[in-house]
Amino acid sequence: MQKLFIAIALAIVAAVAPVHAQDFPTRPITLIVPFPPGGSTDVTGRIIADKMGAFLGKPVIVENVGGAGGSIGVGRLARATPDGYTIDIGQWDTHVGSIIYNLNYDLQTDFEPIGLVSNNPQLLVAKKALPADDLKSLVAWMKQNPGDAKFVNQNAAAQVSGLLLQKLTDTKVLFIPYRGAGPAMTDLISGQVDLLVAQGAVTLPQIRAGAIKAIVNMSPQRSGAIPDIPTSDEAGVPGLYMSGWFGLFAPKGTPRAIIAKLNDAMVEALADPKVRMRFAELGLDIAPRVQQTPSGLAAFHKAEIEKWWPIIKAAGIRGE
Image (cartoon, rainbow, N blue to C red):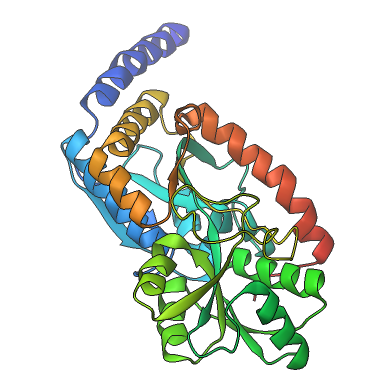
């Protein structure tokens, strides 16, 4: 009799689950942006949320959850009910570099990939008054003024970038902690800090407005979205790279059918001409179609971890 009850229960679950997935979503979805408003993650998240919501027929509401290099927001995702109604826009800082913090979740096993959104050039930018206009002159100024360069440390990517800059050029910077690139940009414009590494979504508008200046694109090759900014290799400091990307993640255990619906909405959003134009304006290169899939992001994320974790651990980098 007990076996009969179990069989009936399993049959009911199997019958009900597809219906829930088919009806998804029946209410608004929360997209966690694990940084304060105004940064590149926030800007990109709002663009994607708007188009995904239109496709799904329910609003995708952005919730900014900043702090600890994005690890607080990602922790909220890890604890969320795996029903598709809470997702996040993750990136190198939050889903790779946050290993520098004491996390209460596992970056490799506690999340379901939805799809890779974009590959993003990281730009090293400077305040307008800094007496250097390119990487070569910046290094020369730093050597003449050891430890004077106020380098923003708003996340793991920024800290690793600063450490790489020091190592490759035999210079010293003064790390200044911030909660996100948005607040840091405000102080860069006002001249309170000297250097910032951030993605094009937050830096390009200010570069084009003449409020700050671009020093270098920290990528192995020039970006199709911003071809006029030279790479670090071209500028005389080979190997000064920092990875940048955006991807969507859900909590571990989210049903595959719901992941598929969320992925469909993301892919539809990325195919929209207005989104593609907006991404180009922000200096974001939309991910290749093969990486926009859940399996594509899973493979990409695994490769990023395997590449960067040994570097971070060897350098002994820890979050503040």
